[in-house]
Amino acid sequence: MCILGKDRLLELIEKYKCIYPFDLNLLDGDGYVLTVKEETVLQYLEHKNLISNEIVFTPPNIVAHLTAKSKYGRMGLSFLNAAKVHSGFVGRLALEVVNLSNDRTPITIKRGDPFMHIEFITRIGEESPYVGEYQFQYMTDEEIKMYIPILRSTLKNYDELAKIWFRNKQIKL
Image (cartoon, rainbow, N blue to C red; front, side, top):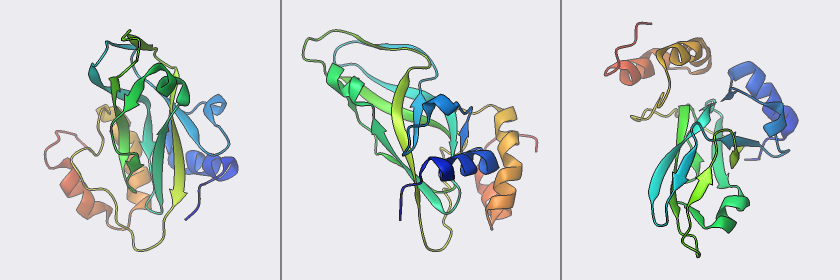
């Protein structure tokens, strides 16, 4: 296993839309910095799920790990969710946070602010794509349709997985 550098990440983004929309200015050498979809204000002790502006796709030989921008940790924002994105996952990420600031003041995260690092890591072994209920979370039908050809060409058992993913969705493919 190894963390993909900037050049390899750019190849993945070009080939698989691993991050969409993509902004070259948000590459940080060892990964990418995700932004927040909507401006959010958290009051002291308030818990919210923040949604990434970017859609993330991890091909079958890749997993991703998330780490918070230290700027927000210094403000007192605590990140609650596990920091892993399974191989084969595609969707916007829900980032669980709570305001634990010592001065008990609100924390504002503005739309488009750099918020959380994502690092892509190679994995070895048999393909085992994500099949959970959060596949395609917070995506429009049009965005999902954009990823179908990528998933079909990338995942060995796409047809079997698609039956699981779309059984409860009303998407016309």
